[in-house]
Length: 275
Ligand code: SIN
Image 1: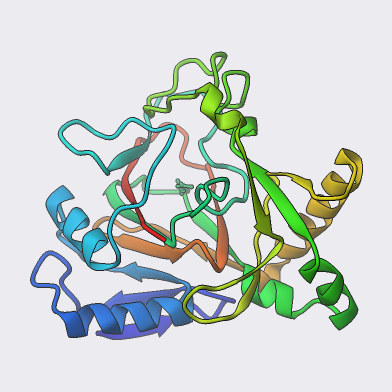
Image 2: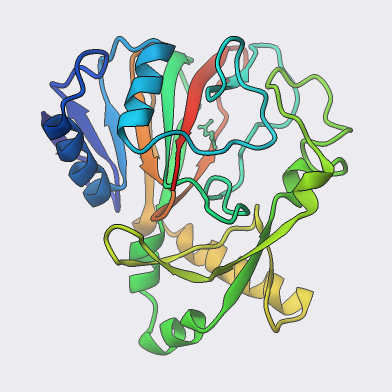
Protein backbone atom coordinates (compact mmCIF):
# COMPACT_ATOMS: atom_id res chain seq x y z
CA UNK A 1 0.00 0.00 0.00
CA UNK A 2 1.56 3.33 -1.07
CA UNK A 3 0.30 6.36 0.86
CA UNK A 4 0.92 9.88 -0.47
CA UNK A 5 -0.25 12.63 1.91
CA UNK A 6 -1.91 15.56 0.15
CA UNK A 7 0.24 18.16 1.92
CA UNK A 8 -2.97 19.94 3.00
CA UNK A 9 -4.51 19.69 6.48
CA UNK A 10 -5.91 16.24 5.68
CA UNK A 11 -6.18 13.82 2.77
CA UNK A 12 -3.98 11.13 1.26
CA UNK A 13 -3.88 9.16 -1.95
CA UNK A 14 -3.52 5.39 -1.65
CA UNK A 15 -2.30 3.20 -4.49
CA UNK A 16 -1.08 -0.36 -4.74
CA UNK A 17 -4.16 -1.90 -3.19
CA UNK A 18 -7.03 -3.75 -4.86
CA UNK A 19 -10.30 -3.31 -2.96
CA UNK A 20 -12.22 -5.58 -5.31
CA UNK A 21 -10.20 -8.54 -4.07
CA UNK A 22 -9.80 -10.16 -0.68
CA UNK A 23 -10.04 -7.75 2.24
CA UNK A 24 -7.83 -9.42 4.82
CA UNK A 25 -7.93 -8.36 8.47
CA UNK A 26 -4.37 -7.01 8.12
CA UNK A 27 -5.26 -4.93 5.07
CA UNK A 28 -8.35 -3.48 6.79
CA UNK A 29 -6.31 -2.68 9.91
CA UNK A 30 -3.74 -0.84 7.73
CA UNK A 31 -6.48 1.06 5.95
CA UNK A 32 -8.14 1.99 9.23
CA UNK A 33 -4.97 3.43 10.76
CA UNK A 34 -4.15 5.34 7.55
CA UNK A 35 -7.72 6.66 7.41
CA UNK A 36 -7.65 7.77 11.05
CA UNK A 37 -4.35 9.56 10.44
CA UNK A 38 -5.24 11.32 7.18
CA UNK A 39 -9.04 11.58 7.72
CA UNK A 40 -9.77 11.43 3.97
CA UNK A 41 -8.23 8.73 1.79
CA UNK A 42 -8.59 8.27 -1.97
CA UNK A 43 -7.91 4.80 -3.36
CA UNK A 44 -6.81 5.15 -6.96
CA UNK A 45 -7.34 2.84 -9.96
CA UNK A 46 -9.98 0.62 -8.39
CA UNK A 47 -12.24 -1.74 -10.35
CA UNK A 48 -15.02 -1.88 -7.78
CA UNK A 49 -18.65 -2.68 -8.46
CA UNK A 50 -21.52 -2.28 -5.98
CA UNK A 51 -20.80 -5.70 -4.43
CA UNK A 52 -17.21 -4.65 -3.75
CA UNK A 53 -18.39 -1.32 -2.31
CA UNK A 54 -20.70 -3.20 0.05
CA UNK A 55 -17.98 -5.66 1.08
CA UNK A 56 -15.59 -2.81 1.84
CA UNK A 57 -18.22 -0.92 3.86
CA UNK A 58 -19.02 -4.02 5.91
CA UNK A 59 -15.32 -4.64 6.55
CA UNK A 60 -14.92 -1.05 7.79
CA UNK A 61 -17.74 -1.38 10.34
CA UNK A 62 -21.04 -2.12 8.60
CA UNK A 63 -23.70 0.08 7.05
CA UNK A 64 -24.93 3.28 8.64
CA UNK A 65 -28.56 4.35 8.52
CA UNK A 66 -29.29 6.69 5.58
CA UNK A 67 -32.46 8.73 6.00
CA UNK A 68 -33.98 10.86 3.20
CA UNK A 69 -32.44 8.94 0.25
CA UNK A 70 -33.94 6.08 -1.70
CA UNK A 71 -31.24 3.49 -2.37
CA UNK A 72 -30.35 2.51 -5.93
CA UNK A 73 -32.34 -0.36 -7.41
CA UNK A 74 -31.56 -3.77 -5.96
CA UNK A 75 -29.53 -2.44 -3.00
CA UNK A 76 -30.59 -1.42 0.48
CA UNK A 77 -27.53 0.60 1.47
CA UNK A 78 -26.16 2.34 -1.62
CA UNK A 79 -27.37 5.76 -2.69
CA UNK A 80 -26.48 7.53 -5.93
CA UNK A 81 -25.10 11.07 -5.71
CA UNK A 82 -25.79 12.18 -9.24
CA UNK A 83 -26.40 15.08 -11.52
CA UNK A 84 -27.35 14.83 -15.17
CA UNK A 85 -25.50 16.88 -17.77
CA UNK A 86 -28.51 19.14 -18.36
CA UNK A 87 -29.71 19.36 -14.75
CA UNK A 88 -30.42 22.86 -13.44
CA UNK A 89 -31.51 22.21 -9.83
CA UNK A 90 -29.16 23.65 -7.18
CA UNK A 91 -26.08 21.48 -6.55
CA UNK A 92 -26.54 18.77 -3.93
CA UNK A 93 -24.54 19.16 -0.68
CA UNK A 94 -22.91 22.44 -1.62
CA UNK A 95 -22.75 23.54 2.04
CA UNK A 96 -20.31 22.29 4.67
CA UNK A 97 -21.59 19.42 6.80
CA UNK A 98 -20.72 16.16 8.50
CA UNK A 99 -22.95 13.37 7.22
CA UNK A 100 -26.21 12.89 9.11
CA UNK A 101 -24.92 14.78 12.19
CA UNK A 102 -28.58 15.18 13.20
CA UNK A 103 -28.84 11.46 14.04
CA UNK A 104 -28.29 10.21 17.61
CA UNK A 105 -25.39 8.13 16.26
CA UNK A 106 -24.05 9.77 13.10
CA UNK A 107 -22.06 7.52 10.74
CA UNK A 108 -18.33 7.30 11.49
CA UNK A 109 -17.43 7.42 7.82
CA UNK A 110 -18.67 7.76 4.27
CA UNK A 111 -17.53 5.94 1.12
CA UNK A 112 -18.00 7.45 -2.33
CA UNK A 113 -17.22 5.37 -5.40
CA UNK A 114 -16.62 7.13 -8.72
CA UNK A 115 -19.09 5.94 -11.37
CA UNK A 116 -19.18 8.80 -13.87
CA UNK A 117 -16.62 11.56 -13.35
CA UNK A 118 -16.74 14.81 -15.36
CA UNK A 119 -13.49 15.93 -17.04
CA UNK A 120 -13.54 19.20 -15.09
CA UNK A 121 -14.91 20.37 -11.73
CA UNK A 122 -16.96 18.42 -9.21
CA UNK A 123 -14.19 18.44 -6.56
CA UNK A 124 -15.15 17.59 -2.97
CA UNK A 125 -13.78 19.91 -0.27
CA UNK A 126 -12.87 18.83 3.25
CA UNK A 127 -12.25 20.93 6.34
CA UNK A 128 -10.26 19.36 9.17
CA UNK A 129 -12.33 20.02 12.30
CA UNK A 130 -9.59 18.73 14.61
CA UNK A 131 -6.85 21.08 13.45
CA UNK A 132 -9.39 23.91 13.20
CA UNK A 133 -10.29 23.41 16.87
CA UNK A 134 -6.67 22.93 17.96
CA UNK A 135 -5.69 26.25 16.35
CA UNK A 136 -8.17 28.29 18.43
CA UNK A 137 -6.96 30.30 21.43
CA UNK A 138 -7.10 28.26 24.69
CA UNK A 139 -9.71 30.57 26.21
CA UNK A 140 -12.01 30.12 23.21
CA UNK A 141 -11.53 26.34 23.28
CA UNK A 142 -12.56 26.25 26.94
CA UNK A 143 -15.72 28.27 26.18
CA UNK A 144 -16.67 26.05 23.24
CA UNK A 145 -16.12 22.83 25.22
CA UNK A 146 -18.95 23.85 27.52
CA UNK A 147 -21.53 24.17 24.71
CA UNK A 148 -24.11 21.75 23.35
CA UNK A 149 -25.26 22.11 19.75
CA UNK A 150 -28.69 21.23 18.40
CA UNK A 151 -28.68 19.47 15.03
CA UNK A 152 -31.59 18.95 12.65
CA UNK A 153 -32.08 17.97 9.01
CA UNK A 154 -34.90 20.47 8.58
CA UNK A 155 -33.06 23.07 6.44
CA UNK A 156 -32.43 20.44 3.80
CA UNK A 157 -34.88 17.60 4.07
CA UNK A 158 -38.10 18.97 5.61
CA UNK A 159 -40.99 19.38 3.13
CA UNK A 160 -40.23 23.13 3.03
CA UNK A 161 -36.43 22.63 3.01
CA UNK A 162 -33.85 22.99 0.25
CA UNK A 163 -34.58 19.49 -1.10
CA UNK A 164 -38.27 19.62 -0.15
CA UNK A 165 -41.50 19.83 -2.11
CA UNK A 166 -40.38 22.83 -4.21
CA UNK A 167 -37.18 21.15 -5.37
CA UNK A 168 -38.03 20.18 -8.94
CA UNK A 169 -36.10 18.39 -11.66
CA UNK A 170 -33.51 16.71 -9.45
CA UNK A 171 -32.25 13.34 -10.67
CA UNK A 172 -31.16 12.19 -7.19
CA UNK A 173 -33.68 10.12 -5.22
CA UNK A 174 -34.01 12.47 -2.23
CA UNK A 175 -37.08 11.81 -0.09
CA UNK A 176 -37.88 14.80 2.16
CA UNK A 177 -40.18 14.18 5.11
CA UNK A 178 -41.53 15.58 8.38
CA UNK A 179 -38.99 13.33 10.14
CA UNK A 180 -36.42 16.00 9.24
CA UNK A 181 -37.95 18.28 11.91
CA UNK A 182 -36.50 16.11 14.69
CA UNK A 183 -33.67 17.60 16.77
CA UNK A 184 -30.60 15.99 18.27
CA UNK A 185 -28.14 17.42 20.78
CA UNK A 186 -24.38 16.79 20.45
CA UNK A 187 -21.44 18.43 22.23
CA UNK A 188 -20.14 21.31 20.10
CA UNK A 189 -16.65 19.90 20.65
CA UNK A 190 -16.84 16.15 20.22
CA UNK A 191 -14.23 13.60 21.27
CA UNK A 192 -13.31 11.27 18.43
CA UNK A 193 -14.50 7.77 19.35
CA UNK A 194 -11.30 6.06 18.16
CA UNK A 195 -8.48 8.60 18.50
CA UNK A 196 -9.71 10.62 21.48
CA UNK A 197 -8.98 13.89 19.62
CA UNK A 198 -11.27 16.88 20.03
CA UNK A 199 -13.11 18.13 16.94
CA UNK A 200 -15.57 20.90 16.23
CA UNK A 201 -18.88 19.23 15.43
CA UNK A 202 -21.13 21.80 13.85
CA UNK A 203 -22.17 23.13 10.44
CA UNK A 204 -24.46 25.71 8.92
CA UNK A 205 -26.30 22.85 7.20
CA UNK A 206 -27.37 20.94 10.29
CA UNK A 207 -26.62 22.96 13.45
CA UNK A 208 -29.84 24.85 14.12
CA UNK A 209 -29.17 26.06 17.66
CA UNK A 210 -26.95 26.08 20.74
CA UNK A 211 -28.43 25.22 24.12
CA UNK A 212 -28.89 28.31 26.29
CA UNK A 213 -28.46 30.78 23.40
CA UNK A 214 -31.02 32.76 21.43
CA UNK A 215 -31.45 31.76 17.79
CA UNK A 216 -29.56 34.87 16.73
CA UNK A 217 -26.62 34.29 19.10
CA UNK A 218 -26.40 30.65 18.03
CA UNK A 219 -26.40 31.56 14.36
CA UNK A 220 -23.67 34.12 14.97
CA UNK A 221 -21.49 31.50 16.68
CA UNK A 222 -22.08 28.84 14.02
CA UNK A 223 -21.28 31.47 11.36
CA UNK A 224 -18.05 32.41 13.19
CA UNK A 225 -16.95 28.76 13.33
CA UNK A 226 -17.98 28.24 9.72
CA UNK A 227 -15.73 31.11 8.62
CA UNK A 228 -12.86 29.88 10.80
CA UNK A 229 -13.05 26.32 9.42
CA UNK A 230 -13.14 27.59 5.83
CA UNK A 231 -9.63 29.05 6.18
CA UNK A 232 -7.24 27.68 3.62
CA UNK A 233 -4.98 26.04 6.22
CA UNK A 234 -7.78 23.69 7.29
CA UNK A 235 -9.12 22.80 3.84
CA UNK A 236 -8.22 19.99 1.44
CA UNK A 237 -9.56 19.90 -2.13
CA UNK A 238 -10.13 16.37 -3.40
CA UNK A 239 -10.04 16.01 -7.19
CA UNK A 240 -11.84 13.01 -8.60
CA UNK A 241 -10.47 10.48 -11.08
CA UNK A 242 -12.30 7.58 -12.74
CA UNK A 243 -11.93 4.40 -10.65
CA UNK A 244 -11.49 6.19 -7.33
CA UNK A 245 -12.97 5.19 -4.01
CA UNK A 246 -12.98 7.96 -1.44
CA UNK A 247 -13.36 7.30 2.29
CA UNK A 248 -13.67 10.05 4.88
CA UNK A 249 -14.11 10.31 8.63
CA UNK A 250 -17.25 12.24 9.59
CA UNK A 251 -15.92 12.58 13.15
CA UNK A 252 -12.98 14.69 12.07
CA UNK A 253 -13.89 16.48 8.83
CA UNK A 254 -16.73 18.49 7.35
CA UNK A 255 -17.16 18.31 3.60
CA UNK A 256 -19.01 19.93 0.73
CA UNK A 257 -19.56 19.39 -2.98
CA UNK A 258 -18.54 21.88 -5.67
CA UNK A 259 -19.78 22.51 -9.20
CA UNK A 260 -17.91 23.64 -12.29
CA UNK A 261 -18.91 20.69 -14.48
CA UNK A 262 -21.90 22.18 -16.28
CA UNK A 263 -22.81 20.14 -19.36
CA UNK A 264 -21.29 16.93 -17.95
CA UNK A 265 -22.83 14.09 -15.99
CA UNK A 266 -21.51 13.16 -12.53
CA UNK A 267 -22.42 10.05 -10.53
CA UNK A 268 -20.95 8.48 -7.41
CA UNK A 269 -22.22 5.55 -5.33
CA UNK A 270 -22.33 6.22 -1.64
CA UNK A 271 -22.49 4.19 1.53
CA UNK A 272 -22.10 5.28 5.13
CA UNK A 273 -20.28 3.35 7.83
CA UNK A 274 -22.07 2.73 11.12
CA UNK A 275 -20.83 4.58 14.22
C1 SIN B 1 -21.89 14.36 -0.27
O1 SIN B 1 -21.91 15.29 0.51
O2 SIN B 1 -22.20 13.21 0.09
C2 SIN B 1 -21.53 14.58 -1.73
C3 SIN B 1 -20.19 15.12 -1.96
C4 SIN B 1 -19.93 15.35 -3.43
O3 SIN B 1 -20.86 15.22 -4.25
O4 SIN B 1 -18.82 15.72 -3.79
